[in-house]
Image (cartoon, rainbow, N blue to C red):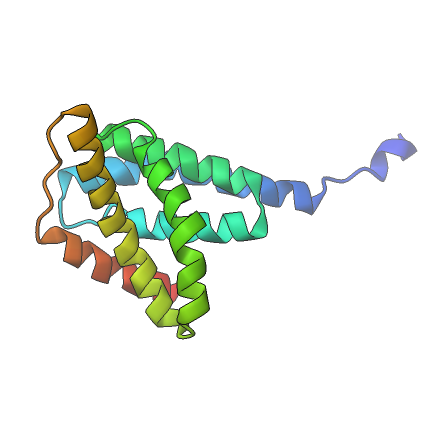
Length: 156
């Protein structure tokens, strides 16, 4: 019994399990954002988290964000893995240029959030032309979502 008394759960292992709660909560949140259109879908926040996870090389976070993006696409009826493709392209080619030329951190956050939405809309436009399907509509809520998510990102 004495050998077992020294065994304790490692706190570091428990911290790895905390992000797994994010996926079920995001499923509920995505469902609510589809019902109530004034609730932003957190697409820009997911892009910021993706950029951070890639910079820190955290595979579990990247996989979790990819699962959240698949939920986002399924909820909105978009092409499978198109948002992940958008994130990879933006993070690989555009974010390094932003980091090189823009020193203002809040300015960069706002641009990255807006870039996630605009980049995804442009990618969907390109894919709709290639695969001949209807382009999802882009309306005034896009600017509203960018501003709300910028305020949320500034708080994080």
